[in-house]
Amino acid sequence: MAKIAEADSRIFGNVYVCKDCKHKMKAQPLKVLAGKVSCRNCSSTALRPKRKK
Image 1: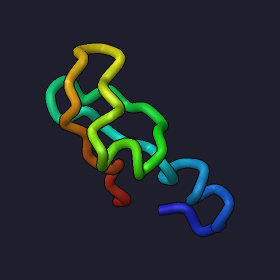
Image 2: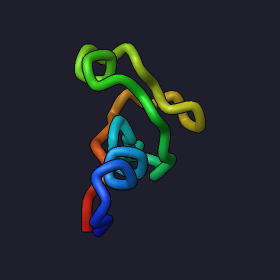
Image 3: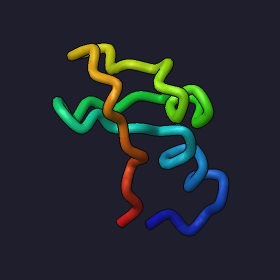
């Protein structure tokens, strides 16, 4: 989508989407894998990376 590497890392880097309420947030990948990060909106720990279209 983005042709510039800096823009690509800013838009997609460390951005996760809640699988339940589709809320976006920035978080560190190791904390997401460990289950220490929860959604601010619904308190779910089911997160996925933002998709690149």
